Image 1 (tube, rainbow over the protein chains, first blue to last red):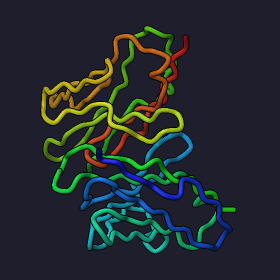
Image 2: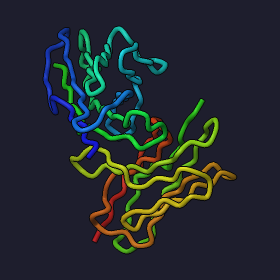
Image 3: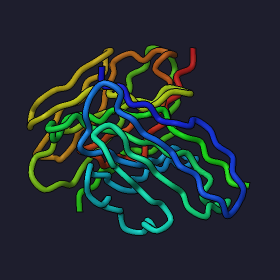
Image 4: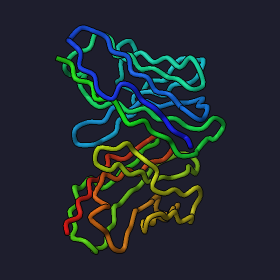
Length: 117
Length: 106
């Protein structure tokens, strides 16, 4: 149980276009989802906390107008990279926590490799 | 603010060697602590956890003890295998350490 599906797994887009990444909890409800960016030397940077039905909470230094997060239901959060540029190329990972289980482990999607040309 | 500091590595060991990866944290209150593992080409998955001081989490031969007095949660394994080659992340709540890449050679 507790499967998180992230789509697409890979995407290539042209500079200036926008890309949407979906994160779905398949067999559980997730009030809170988290979006991360993983850098080449493996470090995992928390970008934002996505709360169902309310605005996302962004970490310091993350541009909220560039990385739009929507969490419209208890099973779906989306990250849209707007006006993408080559420096946005990275590996983006989402995770989710079971509803009502504060301090429980996170369940991760398999990530999305974004390449901006 | 809350943070996790982890030995960055990379770490290269021979099979059957002893492994320690250090992790310390700063946090308000007493959070649950976790170790996650990312095998090559796969997503992160929970390796073990501890929910309160002095708890020991264990799984697949790995262990970590929640030490409140030293704010630490070091990962250990007595005898590593080639199949343990992966990246290991220490975490509390949604905050992660930098990750440690472990390579085990036959």
